[in-house]
Image (tube, rainbow, N blue to C red; front, side, top):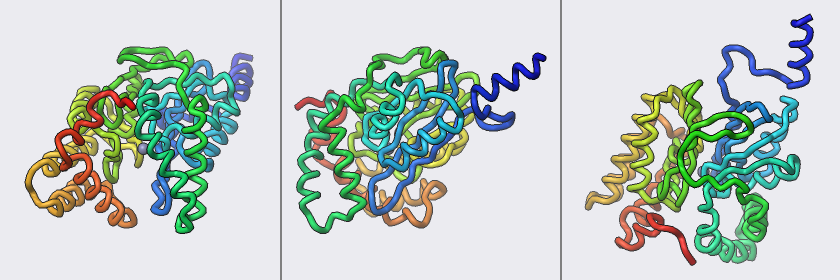
Length: 318
Ligand SMILES: [Zn+2]
């Protein structure tokens, strides 16, 4: 009788995680060369439903998230956004339409971004849409991005995370870490103590750190904080899960890249340094992209004027 009840409970709960399977479900974000990336989504089971960490940018990605929830037969009870970048938050709107009661947890860093970075990208969007060279895939992305910038309430958190600590999200306890001025003005990363899994958003991006809104010193501090946590598995914002030794390797490549970018060394030397230091994380298809991104970040974030370098090390204001 007890067995039968358990079987019924399992049917009601949908497809249960099988023994030996990882204690999370990763929906990998694509990094296509012809349009913007999607961040990884990580799905955790909680008493009240599923917790989705980051929701991607493109509709195909959020569809994969929603399809997974349907397959599992469980509602999405909460979203945690590791940061406001649109490749991690645009899908909030799709999830919210399917699950109107979903709770969204994030820092309030989106507000400063709306007044500055996103305001500028909103202005650039119309210009790009008027340009006949903009591809259809890029157009779709620009229009979707413009919609959430014009209607930020679609993606905005209704649970603002202010500080680090243990939190109960959808009935599940998680260690929530808030890092100020790292990849963005306010990044969130999670540590699942029981399973020793860290979910760190774009504080780790396998092929190249996305430094568009970065404060490199805050970022280095955040990586040191992550290292202090006893994780066995780390899920980056983009790319496959890493073990501890891979993370240490990536952190060294990042530290060396920042130091080289800030030195008087030839820029080519710093790009080659990243290419070699992070070689195990870079596939052949992305090599050219990675080199030009590294070049761009040295110029804009590491070798610009002292003022410019500090842009993202203080609150963003209009
Ligand atoms: Zn990202």
